[in-house]
Image: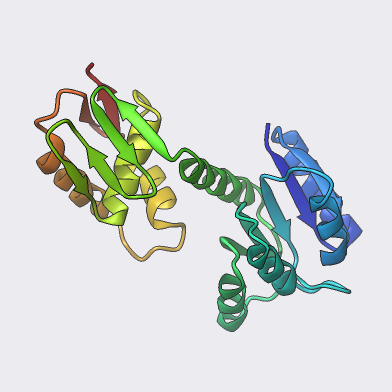
Amino acid sequence: MFDILVVDDNDSIRKLIEAYLVRAGYRVVGASDGVDAMRVLGERHIDLMIADIMMPRMDGYTLTRDLRDAGYTFPILMVTAKERIEDKVQGFRAGTDDYMVKPIDFEEMLLRIEALLRRARISAERRIVAGNVVLDYDALTVSTPEETVTLPQKEFYLLFKLLSQPGRIFTRFDLMEEIWGFDSESDERTVDVHIKRLRDRFGHLDAFQIVTVRGLGYKVEKTV
């Protein structure tokens, strides 16, 4: 079960977000502003943080920037009434991973949280072994007994994701959202192009096979 920290000085909004998250199966702790959030983080593990921007004592921008400077890497989702592009740019430059504008669509919020946690899990699982093939997340390499290949970033992340859950079918939308991001201007054909490149590179290997599931998406089957 994941632990989520909700930081908002509006008690009603914070408690409403907390209720939706608890209903979705998350453990939740609340904080009234950035200073209170830092106290919570000193006391317990957190997997993801949702933070408002306009708060007393320490706002969301400062909180996010201070956490990144201190080495915290968990995903951060900013939820705020500030909708200007300049505000979003400031949020992303501070170190947030995603950004939602109030009023909140709670179904969309849960989808964004799931996507952020999946990306975080990819980052945490630094190495995958499939038969005699080894994927090294930090080096972006795929090693076989014959050679070690360094892949372009998106190709590697795509293969790493598929191999992290062999047998699971990922839709093109799943892969676009997770690898390219929620707000990417690329379309789902980008996934097909990258899958073709991966097949061209590794189709000769016996350890795994990338399978097209017609009408749905792709999966990897381990063959050894």
